[in-house]
Structures are given as structure tokens and as C-alpha cells.
Image (cartoon, rainbow, N blue to C red; front, side, top):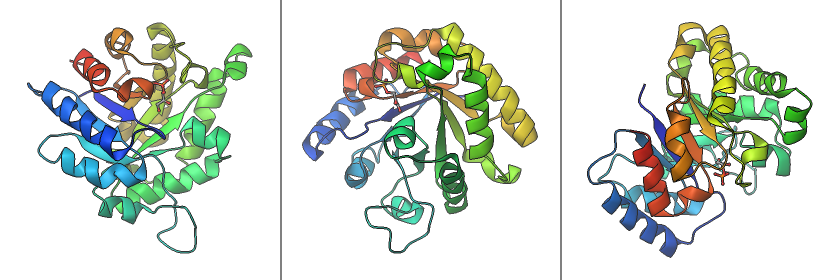
Length: 249
Ligand code: 13P
């Protein structure tokens, strides 16, 4: 399975900084990497980044979307609007959306279905908090988020689905899951994906996210079922992002 290295910029970068990032990353990606590379900038930078990367294989996506097609939802963005801007993918249910913006499993499920129906590749995020891990609830939490997020999904529709396992305690903390810890949860996720989706569950990439850096990316992605990574802080700088991309060879 081809690795996917995805950068989630969160609420970072102005248009000038993004343009400079694109110029430098394109330079670094000669020769072409063997991994897929996707970048998730803030909404208003999507069009500019689609243009900046149009001659490369880099795909651009949104960090969130609303499940309705259109209407009176001030401040929200639809799947069709993301597609119209040139996005090909969307992150759904990131732990920051769940924790800071009270997004529920039910909303995540609606969004995943709406993204698939519209033709956007959803990257659905799951992951436990530190308290949940320390109380031995990691697998319960991760598997219940997975089941709820994929509830009543049509098996035939999931070809473009990606899953990201992002332990909340590892996000932005510099405290990465060890490759063994990541591999353990990824194996559980894989088993559950097969249970929920049958054969289709075997082909879905499972990304690891949480303090991925150039010096730990290679080891993480060499583990079974760690099919790529979702990178926050280290995706903001073209040098460190390129270091991760080429670690996925
Ligand atoms: P960091 O790489 O900054 O820990 O963020 C991970 C993340 O949340 C990616 O979605």
C-alpha cells in the first residue's frame, strides 16, 4: 500500500507564507517522492495552494466541512464548495473539532457520508485522551469512535476513505506514541475496519498523527498498518515536511 503523508496546517500561515512554503516544497520534491502527499490549509488558502501545486501530484484538502449541501449555516463550508475550490479531500472529526468545538460522533458520521457522496476523500480522525489511555480505555474509545463514525456506511462507497489515529496526548505535545504503541492501535483499527467494511476494510490507509517529525516518521511508518501520517506542526515548514515525506519511502 502506498504511504500517505498529509499535512494539517490548522489555523496557520498567511497567503505569503503559504506561497513561500509551496515554492520550497516543490523544489524539495525533485525527484518525486514515492508517497502520496496531501496538504490541508485553512479554507481561504485552498484555491491558491491548488494553483501552486497544480503541476505536482500534491493534493489539497479542507480541514472540516458541514454535512448539509447548502443553506443558512453561517461560518460553515460545504463539500461542494470545497470541491469547487479544487479540494480533493477533507479532514473529519479531528480531535480539536471534537474537543474545542464539541463535534459529536453523530456529526462525524454525517460528514463522512456527505463527503463520500460528494466525491471528497474523507480523512476520519479517531484517538483517545491521556486520561482515557491511563485508565486502560484506549481500545474502547478508538473502536467506538470508529464504529460511530462509520455507522451505516455503504461498503461500496469507501474506496477513498482514510482513517487517522491521533492520540490526543501526542498532538502538539512533542510526546509521540512509540512505534510499538502506534502499531498496537493500528492493528486494532485494521481488525475493526475489516469487521465493519469486510474486504474493503483491508485497503483503507490508517495514518498516525501526533508529534510526527522527520526523525521519528520513518520508524513509525515502517510498522505494519501504519500506512502514513497526519502531520501538524512539522508540516508548516517545507524542510521538515519534506524530511517526513522522504522518510516514507
Ligand atoms: P502535531 O503534529 O503538531 O502534533 O499535530 C498532529 C495533528 O493534530 C495533525 O492533525
